[in-house]
Image (tube, rainbow, N blue to C red; front, side, top):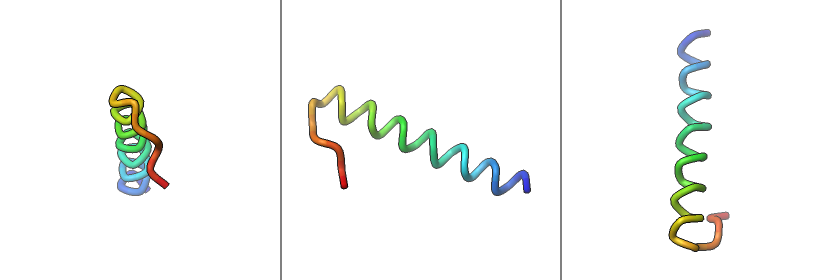
Length: 31
């Protein structure tokens, strides 16, 4: 259970960081 939660949280974190980077670079979101 803990491993799944950690993976889920890190996936959300990565997605958030990627989105923030794309916004800073003023690029369209990846689809």
